[in-house]
Amino acid sequence: MTEDLRQDTLYQLDHVSKSYTRGKERVDIFTDLTMQIGRGEFIAIMGPSGSGKTTILNLLGGIDRPSAGEIAFKGQRIDNLGQGKLATWRAHNVGFIFQFYNLMPTLTAIENVELPLLLLKMSGKERRRRAETALDIVGIADRAGHKPRQLSGGQQQRVAIARAIVADPAVLMCDEPTGDLDRESANSVLETLQLLNTELGKTIVMVTHDPAAASFAKKELHLDKGRFVEREALA
Amino acid sequence: MFRQSLAVTLINLKSIPQRPGMSIATIISVALVVGVLLGFSAMANGFRATVQGTGSQDVAIFLRSGAQAELNSGLSRDEVRLIEEAPGLARDSGGEAIASAELYVIVDGTKRSSGTDANIPLRGVGEDAALLRQNFELVEGRMFAPGSNDLVVGRSVQREFSGFEMGEEIRLGNNNWQIVGVFSTGGTVFDSEIWADLGVIQNLYNRGSGVQTVRARLENPDAIERVRAYAENEPRLNLDVQAEQAYYASQAGATSDLIMYLGWPLSIAMAIGAFAGAWNTLYSSVDRRTREIATLRAIGFSGFPAFVGTMAEALMLSAIGGLVGAAAVYLLFNGVSASTLGGSFTQIVFSFAVTPSAIIAGIVMALVIGFLGGLVPAIRAARVPILAVHAD
Ligand SMILES: Nc1ncnc2c1ncn2[C@@H]1O[C@H](COP(=O)(O)OP(=O)(O)OP(=O)(O)O)[C@@H](O)[C@H]1O
Ligand SMILES: [Mg+2]
Image (cartoon, rainbow over all chains, first blue to last red; front, side, top):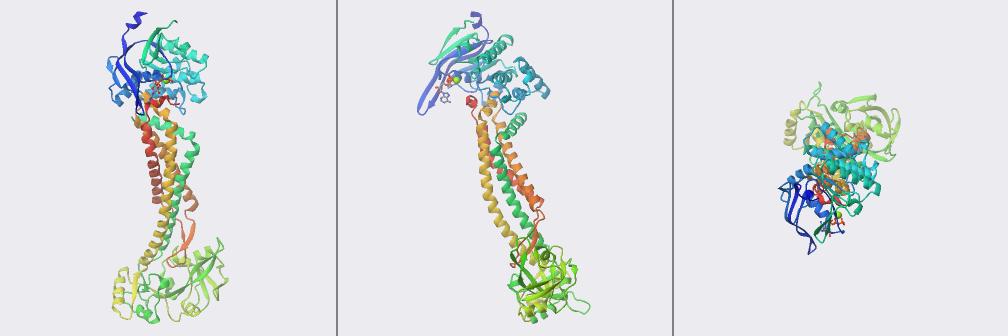
């Protein structure tokens, strides 16, 4: 198991702090957090509500910045990138999966999946082809022409996963990806994530409340009072 | 950036049907603004076209100095004779000036459309009156016989008022008249008049030998200066001498300006309402799409496409409103005839004229409303915080 830790480092966090000011009060979510995330990991982050799980995911995904400290991705700092550069970095390196899918309701499944490709240099034909492939990978190619409201929650989340992987990012950030799904759909979504991790080598960071969901990950981190406690998955 | 903007614009436009009530309300409010603006300008344009088309350049009109309008003017028989001696006037083979001394009074007619009474000018004219109106044409019947109670009526009068059929007898005031002819002057103000023999009018309305105006043909348009110099140097004359065209242009200007003075504030007040409506609609559009916009930002889209998309939605709604308003006014009003008080408090019949430039002005106004109404919501869209991805 220790081989996992010696994998190439994907993320390096050094002395990262994050605090919010609420009124006059300053609330520290973490202070001085130092950690690594290796390539190919599948980490489940668990912890009580308000412990900062979403916050850490936001920092890793480059949609929020630390109050102090450094975050490096593949050796390059991302915490000090300007807005535009950070957006480009996200477009190339991160896929997001949200609890409520966040699909564009007026676009079909395949149009939703094509969205991230609009940010890359690519012909329309190539976009369509890659979107079809992504839908195929998550097993929902037959629903390509459906609008989100014509799909079940589990199917919508699959479309969202296809959108997250279509630009071939190294890492997927999932915030409660099964929080809105029944057990059966949840398991099948989690199996898909597992597959993306093992077969395609995607590094996955997944926040969840659900121990059963966390058991699909290779590693569980428990966040409490701004500290991570590691626990190797049994599965 | 273009591809991003295009994609977000399409997402935006496709989302319009999700807010049908507000979107339709915005379209209607913009349509009303454009409709009112176009309606008033069609009225002003139509009125101006009718009145301005009335005068000719080579007819001089003589009014008492300071009279402004025919109804306020008065000229004695001696003044008429002096006017007819003026140099620069065209003369017939017998050396007589081609001139018509005229006097008009106001009579009541009954409008066909509403059944209500309205004023019609009854003009007493000389024999040359027809020669002094370009495009004068007897459409039916004959001219009045001098000294008789014959009337010839303008085509618009016959169309808009009841009781003026050919051959009918009609009572105007205390007198009975016989309709003997219908004339047209090609859509000018005179089509809204009734003509009779000057002497008969003077007699029936106790005006002695006085008239209000003299119209006379000029040798050429430039001769107006010689005529004016003559009138100024003749101590027995105290006149305003104008080319007929200039006279009617100034009469038209005042009334069509008045129409627009009413029209503009009304459309601006409504435009403010439409602007508020567009703002509100777009604000709520951005509000409802906050999570979508944030999601696009998280994916890597910049804020600018969100601005463009929202602006496109605003402009789309207002452009549709503008077209609906313009089309409605065009279909309902263009060419429809109406009548209004002319410069001399009589009814002038004219047609609404919806001009291309007025339509363009209306559409531009619609787009300005859309732009202003969409501006703040679009800026808000561009500034949606990315962390709103987690909003529920
Ligand atoms: N923008 C913000 N401004 C102020 N406080 C914030 C902000 N975002 C998060 N917080 C606070 O930071 C703390 C951590 O929030 P975070 O969303 O990361 O928690 P979480 O572990 O994801 O909780 P949950 O399980 O409920 O999703 C919470 O106390 C939250 O109220
Ligand atoms: Mg959370």
